[in-house]
Image 1 (cartoon, one colour):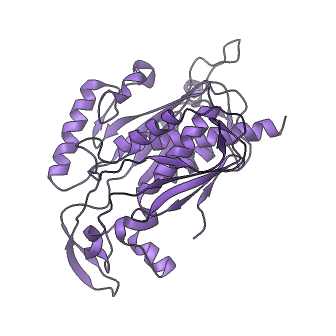
Image 2 (tube, rainbow, N blue to C red):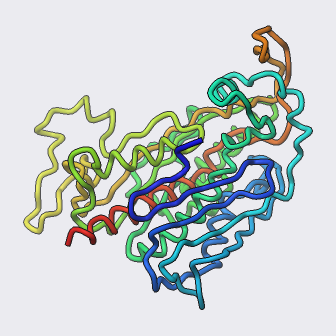
Length: 353
């Protein structure tokens, strides 16, 4: 299986399966001398881990990261940083009923057809548990990008949409509720709705908005390595993501150029920011903001029809511990992938100077 490494200069390769001994990764290219706050890295993992509230999967994992290399006396050495997160609460028997059949809209079918074999326990490598390794790498990238602020939050669950610009919100309030929506009134509605969906044995999708501030001018490489293109690739690599838009996004098509153009101030900033902080694929110093759409989780705890590995129609029912809505736990994953992109492009920029 190829495609387990992300990045050019700041690289992370991840390994492991949902129900294996451990998941983990190797970070290659991290500069030396970065003083790491290991507690902050663990805090990022705690934001993603299962079992943290009643609206997420009840799998109980401490998700404690162990570092094996690349760190000495609290600082990065410049050599590869190896780490692992042990799996301690697998219930593989919960998946025995799908050993020979495929969940609709899940990676089960294509994995089996591509590789001729699949780890059906929790989805194996296709499980979103793999993203814990990304969060570790992203947490280190955040500390490398000490002046850049990356804040993601839930802006939509199903049809419940937060119709406020991020400038109207206090993003520091995102962690005050289990949904991770900075508007407490809307967060309460979203939480109630997710609980209803969970009782039905169903799932629902949502949108995460990410805002990146204090980005220097000049990150991004035309023509095929545009900054927004790499951010899009990063977000679309996350499990369950179905869409990415930055700046004015799809709403921009309704505007005339005279209204959409970001007029300059004398200092080079712009009066508006429909460009989303990126012009010509290069950061312009304004806030970068984008939306990431997540589909409903494929595994539903309801009876359904599907096919087995012989092509026969079979009836089955979802079992196990699954998220009724992934977006609350995906917030730190979005931030982590954004940090990895910016760390990579910072190093690329430095290499050309």
